[in-house]
Image 1: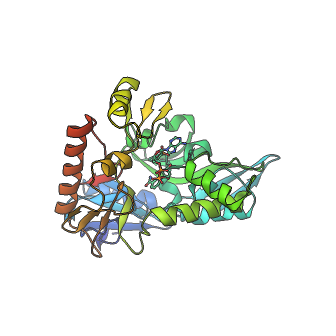
Image 2: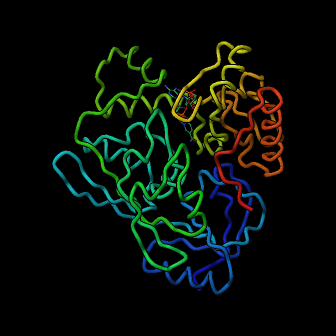
Length: 338
Ligand code: NAP
């Protein structure tokens, strides 16, 4: 019997109290088939997690086989202009970024300081400052829960989109990511074209920053705007930035000429944080939850842990107000698990 009872309160960004009767921490890949078959015998849905940084437990008793993927591994294959790095799903993501920067490999430096493990990055195609994991991802090894076999998915197979992938759609609940392989370049990095980063380097009078300087900039900018999850529980951006049509965006812009406006192939991306801030919700409290007073896109626990009822109240209130005031329906970024 591998599945055991466990407290999940520390395995979710907002530290919402929850337990499960069936938990297993997977450190050896050899145990995977056994734990999956045990869950199948018990007719339990299999729910793989990393550190739970982007998860919200929606109920006190999680009636699923929660398998924490804690597989280690960091193998490098050198090529002329790039390196291929196969990383076990349980490796800490930021440590992987740190290593790549130390080894002069570019491609993920803008993804510095993102909490969580490497194996969960492809799920929502983690992104920051114009970089997405999909830009550096060569392949993903999965355990297919339908066939019971391991297989490799190419970057194309992952069907990456904006904060989206096949793991949120067709493969949801059907695959466990066991490792990811990155292709990192030996060429000099490009500077993220985001105002905060450009302002940082202008102030520092650095024209062509190296990898370590870019990582340092991102670390400092994030630390100044985002709460440290070790000190203030949170699960990062709580809402996705909505993408609307040009017409819809222009309508809002006539009323709010200062609205940031990012055109892309799918339409116009609007900052969800800006929408929430603009209607004065920054700092608003809902019991144990606060719309973070330094960044309206983040919901934080006001005490050491949050109550799910307060989170749902905050979420529903924000969605309702933004719909009433801008005609836009926000979608949450973290998964709420029942
Ligand atoms: P910000 O600079 O205040 O900008 C607000 C939003 O506008 C961002 O979310 C960003 O979209 C978009 N944006 C800004 N400059 C842009 C540009 N030059 N081109 C296209 N889009 C632009 O954002 P922030 O809150 O400090 O976050 C900075 C970066 O870190 C963002 O990329 C954000 O996604 C990322 N981040 C992610 C999480 C998470 O939990 N997933 C948490 C914190 C920050 P994009 O989000 O599409 O980049």
